[in-house]
Image (tube, rainbow, N blue to C red; front, side):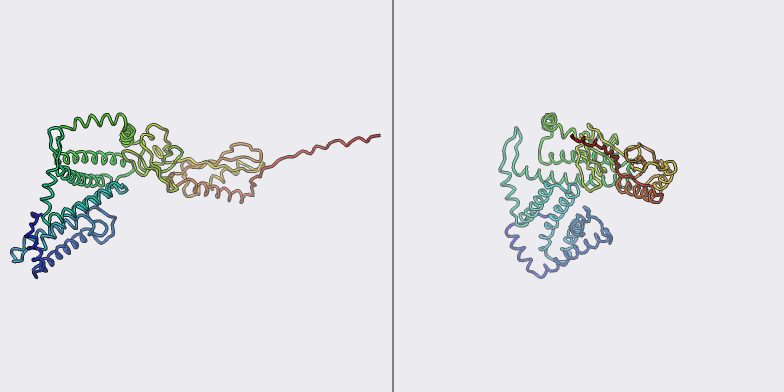
Length: 428
């Protein structure tokens, strides 16, 4: 970006915008935008894809379009002296494109890294306002005056002098560095998780979390250095942070440590069917602080990782995904149970989700008050699809066999004994 304009240059700029040569500049800028849009469209392809940092949803709302347009605008601006065209429109277009690059980069990266965070939405709006205000101040020539005034507002912190200008520049540097760190970590995480299967997804997840933490830490150090903060003061900050973790933040620290332990031990993996505190579902994500469990009914439970370490967790997919299901039916006394057992087992075996190995089994469980109780045991290999549907199909298959064999399912029966009282004696 060129230097800001003075008041005299602003008047000259306004006069230049009214000249016919401004139409030539506007045409060059329109050509740069069209070329940038075409190149990004060809790079993305015609297939509609989810919103990404580079391409966005509609090409123009991604990062690649304004970056490419800005590069082409710089090239076109260098050609203006050879064409004999005075520069007027480009003095406005380049700062606007630069501001658009900053806004698109911040918004896209923060949205991808923190899709549901309200704080990130507030940061996005703040960066957008600051970027546009900075463009206006730069073009009008007011920015140097404002920065000098802000530099005059300062205070002492020990031997260091800190001004409002240092705080603003440091904050902007921190946002830029952290956004770039988040972008790089998101790209690395996507490459690590791409093509992962259930056996190594947890290890790739912990690697992605470690890479993100390391990049954010390095980015924070660079941002503090850019803001003029002496990094030797971090020793005092580290001591204060240790005290805070020991008292007020011990639960949060325990959850973070538990998250890394879970990912390292692979006792719980993404895709496992688990039951925690009477909530049963499939693990959809393991974060450093919490784990997301989604039930078959669509409800999601956010469980702190410390609970998964310190409490009892039932995992039906850890060593073997097969699950045993039992159903019970009563038949009338007098039924030939030995002849009925193979027929019921064959009917259960024909149900689509029932496994053939281990084979279904029908056992005489008990002699009830009204009939004989049979337990039907069968195995399934996909508990994540639910157990109610397959149990219903098995019960229907058993009912068809009982109806075909004319076997009665007994109703509750009671035997009543009538006791007759003796006839009253006649009085004389």
